[in-house]
Amino acid sequence: MPSGPSTAARTPFVLLVVVLLGGGLIGLLLLNTSLSQGSFKLSELRKKTTELTDEEQALQRDVDARSAPDALERRARELGMVPGGGPAFLEPDGTVRGMPSPAPRPPASP
Image 1: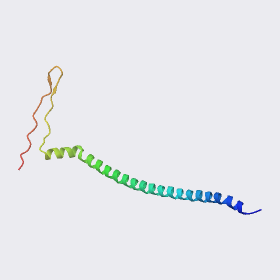
Image 2: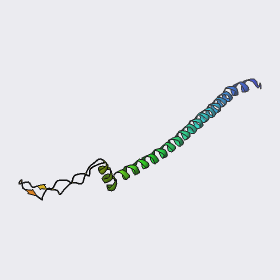
Image 3: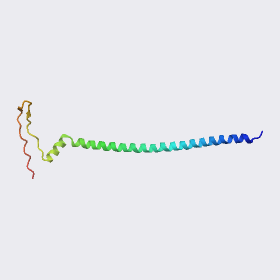
Image 4: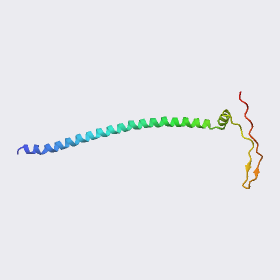
């Protein structure tokens, strides 16, 4: 028996297997590269999220400090506001309940 036809029949099969293995390895390399890029992006986004969360908390503390009653009163006095006088309420039938009084005059500024 000649060995020629047997070798010729194996060559396309061997080439097909080599091409499939090479294509699989290249595919795995591309997949691994893509996953690595995604991992770096995820790490970057987590860092940015942490920074933004810290900034949000600092801003919330600032808002809380400025909206505290004593801070609001101090700022109002700096703007020249004074506490209001006694309130009066208008009833639905048109009568006035309470005695209205004017607000005190602010102290004179030097």
